[in-house]
Length: 259
Ligand code: MN
Image (cartoon, rainbow, N blue to C red; front, side):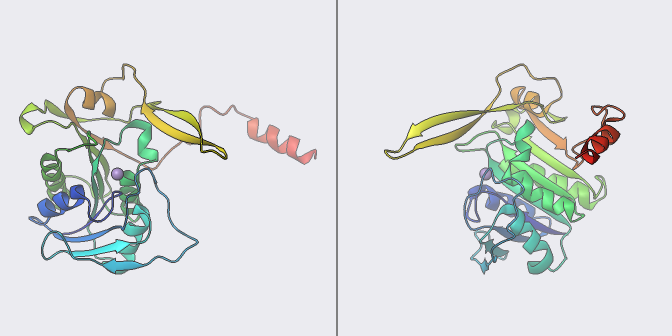
């Protein structure tokens, strides 16, 4: 099995190399990751600038590693198509310090990187731990490795895209493992206003909504001290959408033709 490992925290992040060290016990690993921190960049890809890659000294011996002057998604695209020459069986992204839950998966660089693997037809796993400071990485790395083995042995389907979040607890205190769905309306954007001496500026502050969340959502699982595994799909809307009334499209077309 050959695994491409990436992240959104930059190639020398501790979370990435903890993951690499664990995965290397069961698979061949290639690291392709951004040359700098890019948390919150989501699924962004770089289309208007050239992308350069650099071979770097790995922090785990005998691992091929490349930094990319681009986004997490760029890294996966280049890794899959050029650096690993279409030879990858699984993409794993992380380990991110800070959970990626609910609506936040849409702006998460960690999830955005895994998404590229999924869009290229590969199984993909995003892994995060619910702590900014000193996240406990070992259990997360071990779980990712176990999931990789389940994929390799076909216990999990190859077209799977998993968003994995762990509470920042010692293994003995983790209460369980839940298959969850994304919590909805999970975050708000506060806007802070400041003045730099010349101009007003704004600062966006993204916060988790403080509310009782539904059972079996990812945020609920974190609050309960459970590991959360959310199977993701790229279908954002149901088709045909039940929210759009019958006849609206012909109405719109008629109105358009009157102009
Ligand atoms: Mn990050």
